[in-house]
Length: 122
Image (cartoon, rainbow, N blue to C red):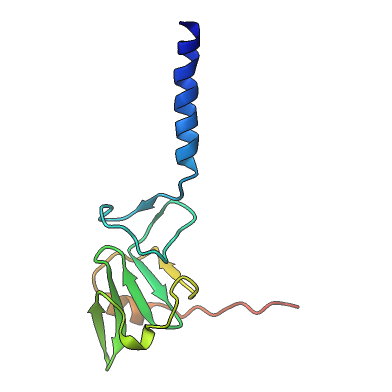
């Protein structure tokens, strides 16, 4: 009977440690919707939009749709247009927008300051 007393805590600890290595936890306003396969954060994060600066494309995690600028207006679509078909979003540079959760990305995009890359001192 003494061995059963030790087996339960050890089993619980083993299960907990195995779940610990499963990956990050994503907090979203709609957690029942899975994130796209190219999005893999390395920590707990609350984010609604992912921005791809080279493409000028946003991805809305909440609505599971892409927002991109075309013909002087913002387009919302479930998939990217054909011109982005060969782009690998996993390898594209991404910026997680952690300071905006609103619905009007147009206002956010026009108000944001463009980030410049730091030049190395070498």
